[in-house]
Length: 123
Image (tube, rainbow, N blue to C red; front, top):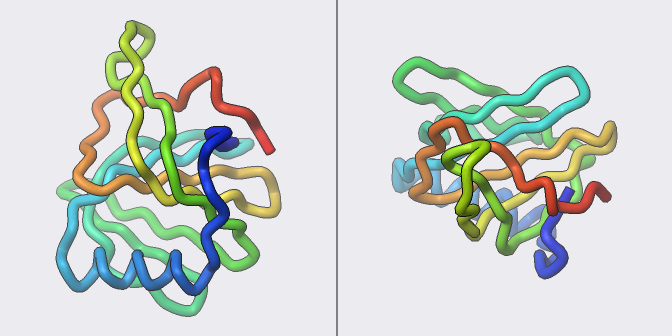
């Protein structure tokens, strides 16, 4: 899934962004959509190395294996008050995983009942 205007992001650049978030203790909004479930939460990056990204929040710990992911950077439409409009557009790093799972990471965005746009294409 991705927004039509999102641009390809080299893996080295994605990991550089993740490490910058880790060192600055940046709050990150997370939306994960996979074949077996979804997750929306927020937290800070506590580890970004060897293909593994770990994010911890007040009551959440999420670890993602991003080996083999294709990264995108750009706008993503979200519905913070799902199912009610209006959608909002956030600038995010997206990871499209080989098995079709999709991860969206946006700075300074705290999701509350956040769901990805139905207008977003699945790649």
